[in-house]
Image (cartoon, rainbow, N blue to C red; front, side, top):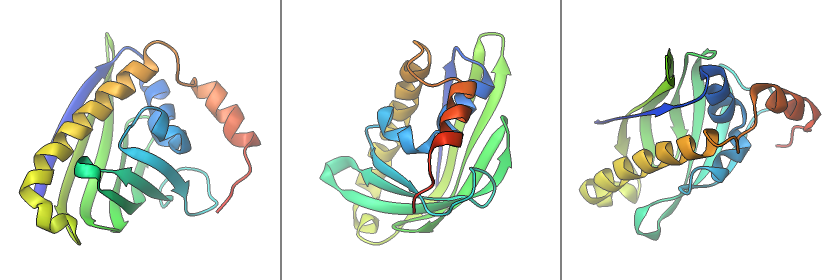
Length: 165
């Protein structure tokens, strides 16, 4: 298994960062160039057991789809899950810690590549870590200037949005 750990400090509350990353999942493509689209695979509100399908744009022009299930949901401290379908096998987590300057975000992943990605292994691993770093930097740029919804705006929007699967 390959281990990946990346961090970023964001000038916003943990509740706000949590809202953007864990509750406004369909809008992840607004701040992650590696994610083309996200679909929720069940009809329940985000939480433990929620499943998503991510359509990814990977290095080298590769396009893949992965499905994940959230196995831990401790708002606004930690969300973790496992890959349930696609070329990635393993686990992932986001941890949020309040600091004097805002929120310290840690993304960790313990994974192995399967399918066609297995053959690109060594070449892709470094690019994948670079992509995660870039995604966390983009998340910071999305949240800090106020482009991202606040916790209240997001809750109101989620209540009005019909669930589609």
